[in-house]
Length: 381
Image 1: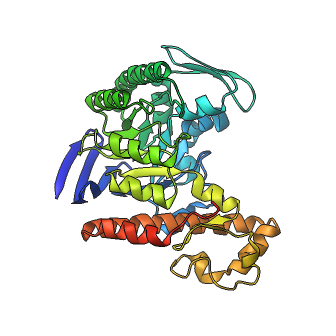
Image 2: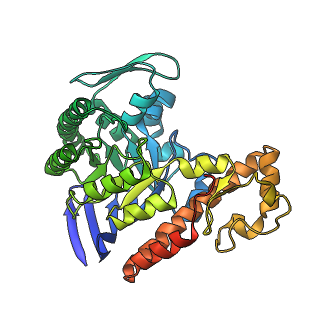
Image 3: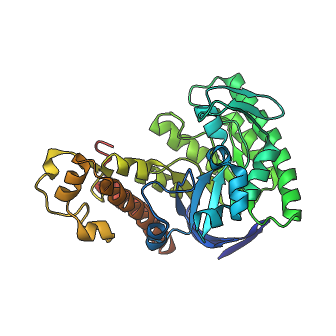
């Protein structure tokens, strides 16, 4: 067993198989076994899922988004509730994204400067300025168990000069975020800060960003700038390349991946945490995961099919409902379809990651991954 102390508490690595590893983070609202998939509750709610659903499946940490919550219901509403956990009635851990990606992807107007980013709300057109310090302060009000620094995320196809500028700004903002985080810790805030590696798809910039982020001394490190429109093969190459640059003793987080193939690749490369809106978004659109592949409920093949979504799945949806019935709900636009399909998809990924942890502990992860992917195809998802 390997044992490491981080600023935020303890991160313990229990077992390794090549780069893949299992471990545990000790956070303010309880332990989190790793690797871990985190459902996304952008607006303080995982879409189509109740808190009871999430607890029933066994999630120890979920994700919410600072940009969205800052705009609505606004920081002061959450402060008045006593923090995000009390507001949501969620007793376990919460990671909050800084909102950097949303600023750059959703805001109709944005202007980056050394000070921060000025943008116009996609909700009502009002103007706002977010700085690295303000983002830390907002997440401290939320009482986030893990908070992310404000960063500049550059998409696939970004030119070298623009990628350099994004890296430099992200690194400068990290230094400022850490200073503010330390001040918040002096005031009693217990959450951890994660720095973010950028550098787009340039190896020299990735190396530079990874070194700067590691040197900052944040409790954990996120691999940013992946799953931003690049081809699958490029994602896999840069995932492996970047993960290999990071300190082994700190938890690693890849943002925005939520399909079995991508998750297993991340685990194989020693990534401990990942999240994505995809499983619930897919569920709302009638797409579901199974051990033999992902498929669409709306297909005519399912009209008379009385079998469960996945005979190998132990979730309550697969135990109680048929493909035929779920197809009917989808075609009839019943809300229940979104709820059941989202539950199943999140259960499926939680179970996949739990089984991956067991495989690593037993020294058979490589075989587990190969066997799973041999049967799994993404089909029409």
